[in-house]
Amino acid sequence: MTEPAERIPVKNVSLATRAALELADKKSYQTIAIPGMGTGVGAVEPTAAAQAMLGEIRSFQPSRLKKIILVDVNDEMVAAWRKALSS
Image 1 (cartoon, rainbow, N blue to C red):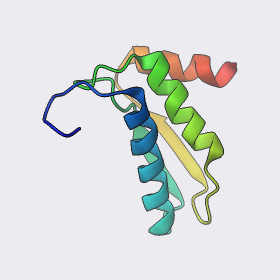
Image 2 (image 1 turned 90 degrees about the vertical axis):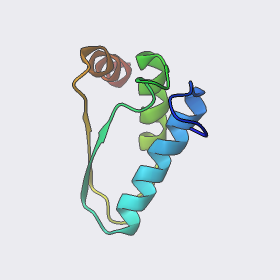
Image 3 (image 1 turned 180 degrees about the vertical axis):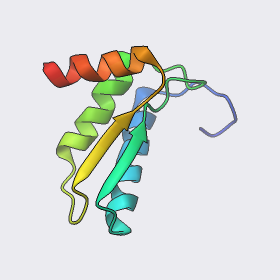
């Protein structure tokens, strides 16, 4: 976001996911937990956010990172991940 509480494009979800994965790998983390991104004040639909996040996760080629945990308190986000993972 360039300004607090602004709506964002789904591309920002992809960029944020990639940045989190790259930093975790650079820091030699073996496991990272990532919440749903962009679905709060960013107003990205959970389905679009889930697809963007999983696209980045699937294409990421880690050196050290072995496990990625997707976690959220929003049932809609969790359902969107489950649906995207099953397709």
